[in-house]
Length: 428
Ligand code: NAD
View 1 (cartoon, rainbow, N blue to C red):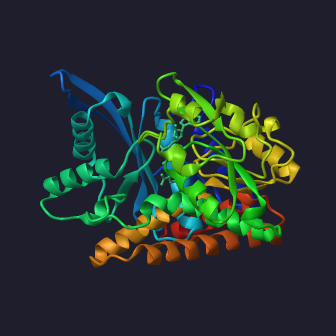
View 2: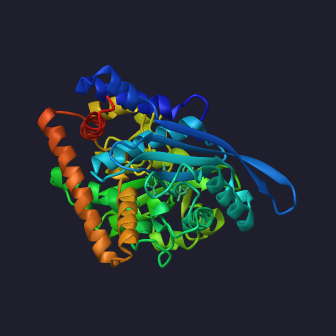
View 3: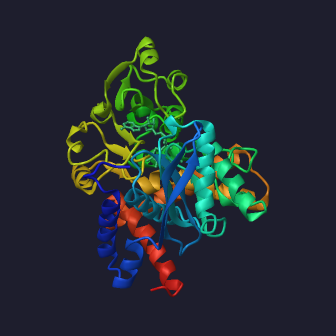
């Protein structure tokens, strides 16, 4: 899901190589961690509503399962690529390790655009994906979840197909299910809230409170909307959001004097996180080009849409006022931009720490499914806060102690945990 010139897997490997050098990892450990353990690519024939058959391309990559079953979402996107899935699966390994949950890293995808597909066609695509992967995924081996353009309904269709194939109930096979059908309360909020738990702690380190800050967000989907919700509850002011416009096939930034109004914008946003332009204008929003979100004169930037957004071309557009970046998206910042951010002393909460709230809550969902006993929302979000805060403090303490950039400190913790698990199992 990336332009031809940007390869997220090459970037994930560069990030890994830097940490492998820092940790002085031996050749075998580098080799097992630098590439996925297993990869699957397959065709999914789907009968369309008009009677024709379309063949979609599906993927699943299992990067590493030394610490537990692979875990990671399935993304539906027209520009999905195997290298994107590889990168995301690797980041999942580090994400589960940095928050210290007993899971490994995996990721899946399908090259498709659900905007152009009826619910029936989407259901048949979900069932087709599971039919291709049923032998190689499962609650004890690899547990999928939603990602960009997939949701609770898609997960339930996938669960239903998996259970039909295996002839029993396996609620722990997939997470992000609807509440009441094996889903956990708090899962919808979890990723965005997790980003904000981390930002709250980062601000605290610098002697600031959220109510003394303003922020600009890229994306207005699941992660961004709930990040804004908690940020506003903590007293922060969201000044701008950007999103993709399906009709114009481009992105726009939405701004309003005095800050955006979350509920008002939610009311005119579709289920893919696209804001209705005409209605936004009626409500007094100013529309700017898609990349204007990054140029805002705010204290905090929250990239929460796509990878490769803060890069060599865009990093210099960041205002001098920006002191914090909390990465909701996976891979939003390239190594070239990282070097500039580090030099400028911008405090970065790196993606696989900042957005680990989703997988942490998915892990809670599995635990609840295994017990067949479900916690109330406050209990889930309280446990999430504890896990995210503990992970943030471990990373920021190491960064301070060893004078490391936050991303490198998070990598040092995560990679050493996975490397040790590989060693302890006798793999390397
Ligand atoms: P989503 O599909 O709900 O929303 C994506 C948003 O990004 C939409 O508002 C869309 O319009 C916007 N967008 C797409 N292209 C854009 C562009 N070029 N410019 C500006 N905005 C654009 O997705 P999500 O679940 O919110 O995920 C966002 C990011 O967070 C992804 O990188 C995803 O991998 C990552 N993430 C999500 C979760 C989760 O639990 N949902 C967990 C961890 C990481």
